[in-house]
Length: 352
Ligand code: NAP
Image (cartoon, rainbow, N blue to C red; front, side):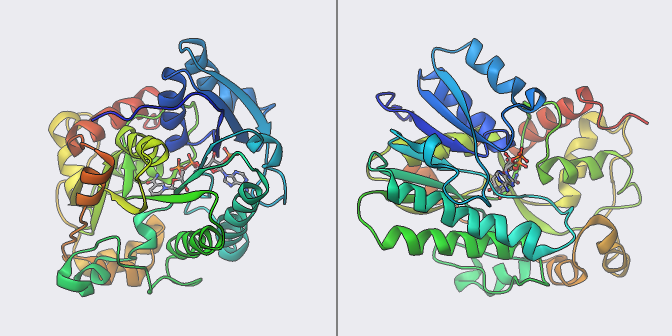
């Protein structure tokens, strides 16, 4: 079921240079919308070339605005006249030194900055926030402890902290801040999308999303001796974009939405890729023993506790609300993963 996009007012997308944002912008431009793209550096032609190319082939138009999550008021100009705001900007990286400065502050203060602009902008009616399942749980053991062993939109992450998986902490605090600001007013409504690990093809030349770093480790030999049987959910980036569009333009959309196609494991991602790419790339074929995984965890950017609490524990993320309320139909993981790997090969990710 497709959602009709209202093109009568401009639409703001924060973090427009990002992986997820690119596919949201594609849907908007294809529908003829006027997109206000908030980016940190509009003069960086390399970062916006793919968006210009999309606009050149579509009926919609795109205009860039210089904005930074850490600069109060810097989204005001970009938001002027917009009825809908997609707030996707937030750091998603394991490459940080100070979790407070590098993850929490941009996520939480950034959400405050954007939503305070919404409070000052009379045209805004709907804000769609890109949160994450990271705001719902940290590790598979959290999932097992959820009511009935199933993670739904009713569950909030209570285990992440500044020292334990701070990215999850940043997303939890940011989403809580968003609900607090939304509930203190009544002109605009907040709808939240909570994707699991986003996979599928990218658009930009040098993607920064951690999604690419994770899939790179499967194909570059990092996991040639084995991969962790750590559970996770995955979802195609184009289905995440479709969920955002429905969240923005369906009048009755409300609340949080887990967007996740399949519950799988890191090892299963590797085994799936092996079927097509195994003869050319050192993809994992076996599970890494638990003791080795715990030792290796910091070398692949994970917390030891995350690995020891996550190994061998199945995960059950319930995506039924996104299917019924937003009309999302999910692509199979294999298709998304293969298309992502092909994109990464073309981009030179695995050149030695
Ligand atoms: P991405 O490609 O790295 O996009 C992140 C965006 O945030 C970039 O456009 C980046 O701008 C912007 N940003 C970061 N810090 C900023 C700051 N201080 N001021 C302004 N903009 C800033 O990552 P992504 O995967 O598309 O992530 C987009 C959103 O989806 C994030 O909210 C992330 O938490 C969420 N999410 C992602 C996944 C996933 O698996 N990928 C899963 C669940 C949720 P620059 O280009 O200037 O750096």
